[in-house]
Amino acid sequence: ERREKIEEKRQASQTAAKPAKVSEPAPPPHGDADFRKGEAYLYGRGVPENCDLAVKSLKAASAQQSAKARSAFGTMYATGHCVPRDLPTSYLWFALALQVDPKNQILEKDLNAIWNQMTPPERQMATRMKQ
Image (cartoon, rainbow, N blue to C red; front, side, top):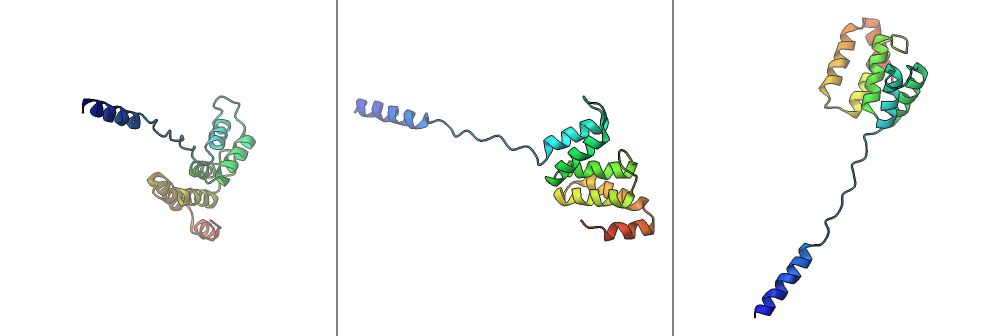
């Protein structure tokens, strides 16, 4: 009887000792590498500031559904940094970012702030632009 109990314990410990499944690391957010590269060129972080390379990298990230890249474009067009200042285009980029990240309250506030700065003709233009 004692041998049976020892054998049962041995079998139980062998079953419990099976290696746990290793989970894959979560993939980085869409376009994250391109976004970081674009932001570095946009603000000269670790590389010389370069608007052309910033826009190119941010466009690549935006094409990969990066809400951060789209928001960066919204800010760029709102301020005229590296692109011409254009509030309807800024509004469009914030709207595109919000499509990717619909619960982001900061994006919502940015979108509303741009809307409030626009003239009625700019608002008409913004609502006609494709999202």
